[in-house]
Amino acid sequence: MSTRGLQKEATRQRVVAAARDLFDSHGYEATTVREIARRAGVSVGSVFTTFRSKGDVLSQVMEERLGALYSELDRMTPKLRGSTCDRLRSIFAIHCGFEASRHRLFLAHIAAAYDWTASGDARPYGRTPRLREIIGDCLADGVARGDVDPRADMAQIVDLLMAAYAWTYRLVAWEGADAETLSGVMDRQIGLIAQGFEPRALQSA
Amino acid sequence: MNTVTDKVSCDQATARPLTRRAMAKQQTRSKVMIAARGLFREKGYEGATIRDIANAAGMSTGAVFANFADKSDLFQAITVEDVMELTVAMRGAAERGRGIEDALLKMFAAGYAYYKPQMPLARAAFAVSWSAQDGLALRDLPCMNNILELIGEQMSLAVGRGELSQEAEVRLRSQMLYDAYLANFGQAVFNGWSLDALSARMRDQIRILLSGARRG
Image (tube, rainbow over all chains, first blue to last red; front, side, top):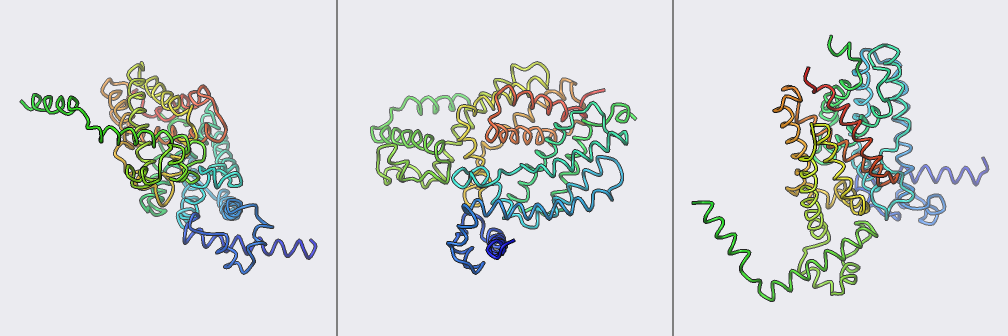
């Protein structure tokens, strides 16, 4: 990478780190680009040569954050044992622990996704292909192990799990629930969805 | 006796002519709400200002503030209007259903059909409900539980008919059905899904979520 390229990348990283802290402590709306620049120790101008908008900064903050979460999931999933239902519970428990700790940041992300004045550059909430993949793999393994009905519509199951999670997250957002409460609710919901994908023979047994 | 007095007071309330002043106020209110709907649809909640709304309604910002405390108050009034109308539509649809799956599907389809022509407004409502500042007031509106209660009613009726088992965990299942219904709005908002696509998705989701609650 050229010196110029290196410098640009260094600025990008500093801005992302500063923005992450500010979004999380003050919220997205209340944070200005000027404040982000000041905290990162760069000029407002150089923020805008690296990012298209505040929405773009938010997207990159989230991408970095989710990247860390997915490496954690990749590290943990091979170690999971037990039924598919329990493995899914563990996957979501890891997810809950991660997101509950920085909930203002995630809230900013969700609100920005639905707000088209901020949007355009903001990546809509819930488009998390990597998480879908991890859940999909878990279900596919379940078919191999025999506790997931091969005729079940896997894409639908993944969608339902994601929907359950996204809306259960409101307990954190709206009621200040902690990670443990959140994953407790998820455990019950995953159990219920599992009734829809377990083979009939297993259910009656 | 109670019903008689209730009826009398109710009749009096509707029969009493509005004063000119009250009528003018009501007209202003509805003009503001129509203008606000248009702007929220076009610019989103954050993008629309009281000044824009006043301009579009052809009045001063002072006149807007005489009727609504602030933008959040105005948005709430619109939301209440919509949710009330939506509740009637969804209840009617559920009553036409045959069996629990059909009743739920018809009900959710009515919900999507209601918002389809005004999806940007639904999108604005989601944005506000998640926002830190104005979300709480919106979420605390009593009518916000209407749809969840409708789902619960249908589920309980199905338990009563013996269609679903006594151990159907009605509350949890109702919440999850509601969550799935809401989550699908994302497909309509971001991916432009048609009503048929939304219904097809919902049909599968209902089947999966009810599969453990079936009797026998």
